[in-house]
Length: 112
Length: 116
Image (cartoon, rainbow over all chains, first blue to last red; front, side):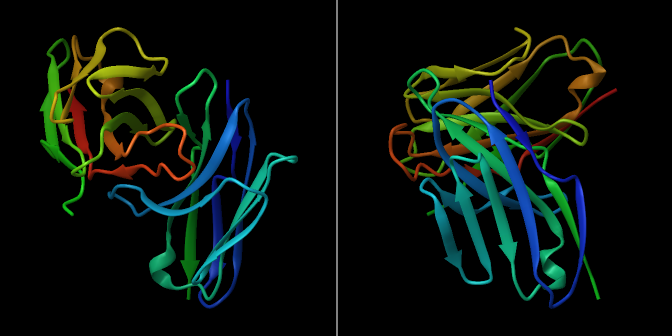
């Protein structure tokens, strides 16, 4: 099976930088996604990593280390609208077709 | 392109009843996955359909079932509802080729089911 861990809650200050970690254990790893979910809304896609390294997309960056089963999402220049839950999701191909498993999410609160 | 749509958005049922939820994927997407989201458990995978066939299934009882039509629209059915079935039910669509590196899932707004 798959096991994904991420912190339950984090608080950060507007304008600061925050790093949200995700560790996972899985067989047949085939990529890691980060999603943002505002309260009462659907998750929206942020980033995807399948190779080791850093992927940068504006204020958001995502890092992956496959050997360590570790990823993080880095949010720079935090804005109040970044207050949301951030979901780490791992894609695996255990028996052929992809299966995506989500972590329980990290609720980020941005304070003034 | 229009996004993923789900109907109804809100639903209130009583224990023992059954419910059918509908999902229309992004045009051209052939894979539809269903998830149950509750505050304590997060997003739990229910099942995935591709070209009218169930490809993957999560660990949910047989009361949860689904199907996909030839136009890729999907329905999910829950029979004999229990209080614990109260949740946000999300569907997500993707191109669904499976082996492609960037087969991203795009979510619909969800159906909020309340069981009384």
